[in-house]
Image (tube, rainbow, N blue to C red):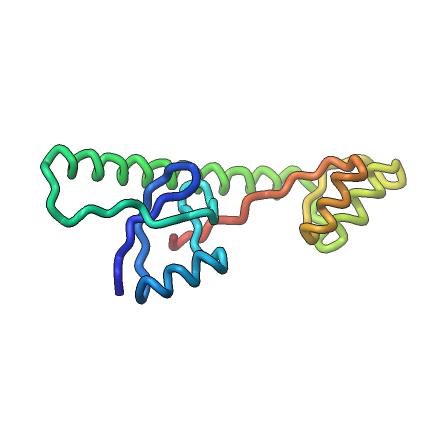
Length: 144
């Protein structure tokens, strides 16, 4: 196993373990690696220097990791709160989301806030029709 320092497109630094460099490359290609702070799947290896650091450099890297961990926690908490608010205040329509959103948009169904599941293609089609839709970020894993 090898530990890599990774960085996402938004500059968040985090660590992840991989079997080897090839396993890392394959997982990145499959978009299976995501930033714990912003959930971006555009990640790369951060520059890693030999393990010879001045105390100032170590402090700076440690501070960046601490800040990233704090941002990740804050983001996870915000996502959890968003999901709680939606589940409490919106009607769940399951896989009928696209059909129900169209009915509401065209006045064929009662106007209300809804949530559910749909495909990315269907969500794009709704947006092109002028139906207001917004994807929710995925629920966070409690053990992450």
